Length: 395
Ligand SMILES: [Zn+2]
Image (cartoon, rainbow, N blue to C red; front, side):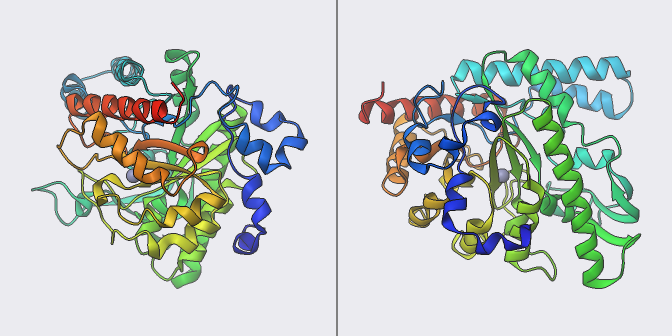
């Protein structure tokens, strides 16, 4: 079914449009009359949703407080017991949530404080992998230092990816707030894994491995939805980087298959990489446009600020099939945006995206920034959005 993604009628794209309609689990129960009417969906995006026009949110990860960096050393050298670790990471999540609330973000995440560096921590939960030491281990941090694996058998996640417990903690720490849970997609997992034992040789092995990764990501998404998550985001910087022997259309199809049957608001974050604040791909959205149009999800979360708002014109087309969350804060720069900087970027996006189909966000997660700067950038994001809301007559 997913292979047909590219051929779907545009009506389907409208019906997958996500809806800002308040509390969790409502999406799956909405009347079919609404699901069939894109007019109602678009007009109703901001009414009764609890979210303002131009909602603000982070992409997912958050900056580490200084004490957490110190504590991680203790965790790594096993000076901390399991209870110490749990307490430390819960406190870090508490800080991440508190900083987002203080800044005034409309949609909160847990900051992924329990995942040290985005996807890497999650590999510990996968079976059938053996870690390959990186060729370079000292010097400036970079993609060539990232963990890499070969398979020792079929890749599986018998205990899941652990994100349901992250959702439960986030709910406890942020009652009454709109919440989003992000997790890496199958392409991004797959980039770090070389199929060997357990898989056929060549392209067939790569395809079989990707199928397994699609399955375990989808299982986690379904578990999150069953636990009440109503706003889920797949992070797929993997789409922007070359996957050996796979076309962009096939890559988009893998993302869609991972999302198949998952209820609620579904976003996909496509970025060019942000390891230690650096990209890892040719920073052109144009080459990705056909693939992004194929992905069956409600919202695409894309980076623009660090690219001087280049290629905004593509959103004119893309925003017809998908809602857009546009990155208007640069997480790869120490430049501290003013609220007017952010407002001006939002105005540029609004030249091509209708306001009711636009969420404003940072280019990527805040994890590669010092915390003081992440806080300043979140405040600028919130204040910039407020400025533009007032201009649109929405106080
Ligand atoms: Zn990103």
